[in-house]
Image (spheres, rainbow, N blue to C red):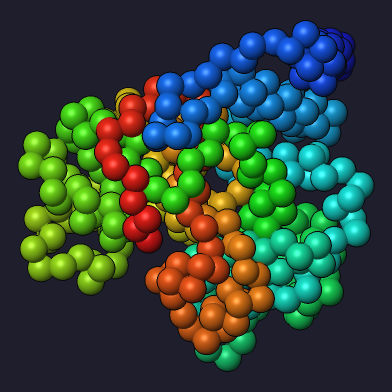
Length: 365
């Protein structure tokens, strides 16, 4: 087993070195003509070669990190790495020693969203699972099974990311830190990114017939209701999130597996990362043609999601950190953040999956 591990490390290292030479030396030297993705939206051509090379480099670096640390890699027999843990591991690898100098400058746990600003100035936000946190800890205190004492201000992000997230509070803190750290890498040089439009604008409506939503994401629900030819199902724990005319779409959470396994288009709220159900839900989408993960909570580097059949990650980047945290501290939500231009919508497209542009770009929340 040790020999096999070293053999894999050598092969992966050689491939990684080849990719680095290709990207940094050969392509610039010969001014290689780069192949482009079909235009996803007017005026936004994307480069397949750039994104494929970057993701390959990140993947190899991640695999090397897993092997050298004795962790089972995704896709292997006995796979045991969750989406959140995989993303954290990759961010650590990308930052390297720089991560040990970054601290939490400010952390806000609002009613709707949690936000963090790091000492680097980067900011990230995530859904706050308020009900789950209170259900476990009650209203007397916010406890943590890790034994770590609050406050988080001034704490090293490397230490917080290393704490097992076996409760909702710590998982939420890890997610906002991960999202803030990821913002540095969510660029067009690394990923296929389309800004300021809805994820559904990049999918041909004719290719969607059976749609399953996990979470009643309002812009998506309103859009799907206008499509007469589709069968829509909405898995939702908070039934009050649905309007009276939408109750015919309701599916109880206990039937999520069946609904997702039969759909050709799946839309999953990023909040599933916060409540720990994302991996399970994605496991049911193997037959889906389109898989969209949507929401600010999914604002981390998307490699782990892409490797699990996700077509598009529709999320946000924080562009006004201090104002964003001020709004969250006052109990405001996504609508106020968009209206005051605190956050910017981005769609990160999996270049490996086939995406059809089929609509007019919009700036809906």
